[in-house]
Length: 275
Image (tube, rainbow, N blue to C red):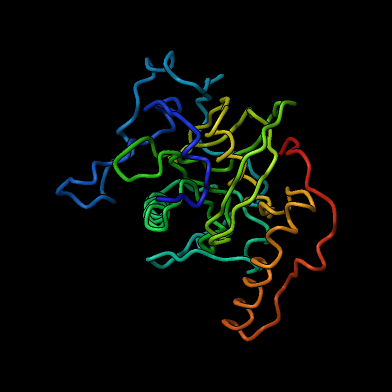
């Protein structure tokens, strides 16, 4: 089955992708219990760190981020109705500013559960909150892409500390761009700072497939979509598909497309910076 982020077939992943304090093991799909009721406490023991392809640099005891009030999501910003639906290009939600999360409560846990649910149902391996119409800094992913397999990773208010100079070209897809796949150049590894679903803060390193999935979703949190990082030659190869999505948006909403690939500035987004 093809995945919306089309790198899975080239990668071999261990069962443990991240240190336990910010991991949730996916529930068995054959369980008699509803799949959304499993506990975030089902974590990989920290003793397993020696087996990980990713390295946790340090875990901070602090709970909750230090935030500027005008950049914090309100309760209204985090309201949602299930089932969530994927927001497709060129919806302006994908370009909007995403607020940082300051409250780690049951509503956030429910949102995370719903995001995983729609991710699996749409054959994805990663999903950001703006892709389901919620403009906050939250992402979920499971590089295995199957409910009941691999690890479910939740990152709140993620930041990039540094990224490798070495880059890798890979064929990517995106749930917000159904049926479109194209090559994107990205750093091979990144150093990340984030909060888990309970508000605990961690700094860690990602490499390989998890690093690429993270970067793709992190771009969404910055209002960047994957064709922003493609060369003009690559964009040209998917231009007709992008224009088809623009026309689909216009037919659905009755409004002109808020952006058009034909007027795209011919400048490839570079780097990630320190956010």
